[in-house]
Image 1 (cartoon, protein in one colour):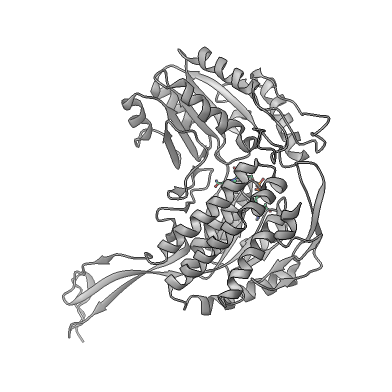
Image 2 (image 1 turned 135 degrees about the horizontal axis):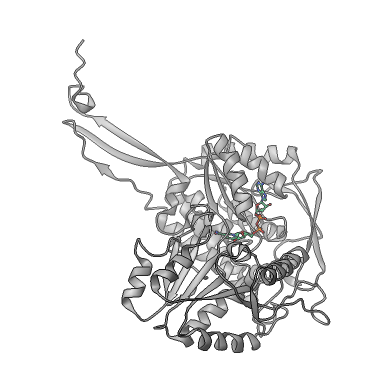
Length: 507
Ligand code: NAD
């Protein structure tokens, strides 16, 4: 595993970093096991309270100098981070695949997303612009500016162990903020690798210590970040359970959050769909990353007239799936992240059966040679009504629920009839249907696609969802505004002091 050495990963790794310096601590040890082969890869220390304190203090201090760097100069540093990621794409992509278990192609894809967001952020560093407004008062000028906020806390999930950090960090930095990242305790080595790659660039450019910080640990360290009044913005990606807790804690101190939480994504298959094209979108959406994407396709809402034809195609396609080592590019489906995830998968299958679901492709755990980690499961499909509790809930595994509809209104109601609101799609060649689906009376999700599946968003658009998905937006479009504070400025260049709203106040 030469990629570990290339990325500076040792058998024992530090708990925290203020950018270039590493800090040890007396925190508990996190062992990283690969779901690919079940082997322990390396150990990582958790940050203890002292290490955490050093990191946040350094990040808060660094903000004072970093915010004075012109934004395009900050962009130039981010450009070089993108270049460094290009150089390390192979090693980092392999580590993502090995530590998290996604396919090698998806591991590389994740690093490509990091490179793309760096490129995006470089351009953005010259476009952090506000509006000018016409004042109601004579000889007055009014405009708005966007200023950096300070320290941004980033809490990320295991399933996108590096890309989600980059969406946040690249934008936060060009906006003039410093960042403190807590990676998932299930993928701590990805955090170390990224920290090492960025440190070399920051050192070369004499970026102040504290702009790019890392703290390792689990829920407790996430709670420290959420409570910390020195951190005006927490960007948290993970389960809805976690998001509700973070929202309550940060909200109690009136801090800001960007929440990117669970999805329960559906594709509507119209009677006017190109069924062969739809099949690729549905199967990749449901089984890619072993069903562990926030945008994974979890439900198919299929027109009654094409239900039998389309489900027959699905069953055939599932029969051709190759499940195995994700670093072998011949395989379609890798493992789940750990044995706990396997238990949740099995429980959902049982719950589905008990609640009245009927499996048309059976699931199960794979055993024997090449499946020693115990984390490989069979993607499965159940006919299940939308209102079943198990269907309403996001199970982070490759279980696909299929159901029928008669009218497009009914299909849209089913699509919207879950607590989550992340990604949605319709497969149709019927313009009226697709326009209705995209209209204000259509999908209630943050992402709505036509003739594309639910997973695999591009970085150019704002990414995120509504309802229990948390409402946050990251990545492209004007998502950068969430990392800045808006200031309205009015300047009087007259010789009078007229008051707004025509108020007279004579002395
Ligand atoms: P998780 O909620 O278990 O953990 C996510 C992160 O939150 C981890 O770093 C964890 O240590 C931290 N955490 C947990 N409890 C916390 C608390 N009380 N306070 C502060 N931090 C806490 O999620 P996971 O299993 O790592 O990831 C899977 C989930 O993430 C799925 O629900 C998936 O849909 C979601 N996800 C959403 C998006 C999105 O953009 N909407 C992207 C990726 C993943």
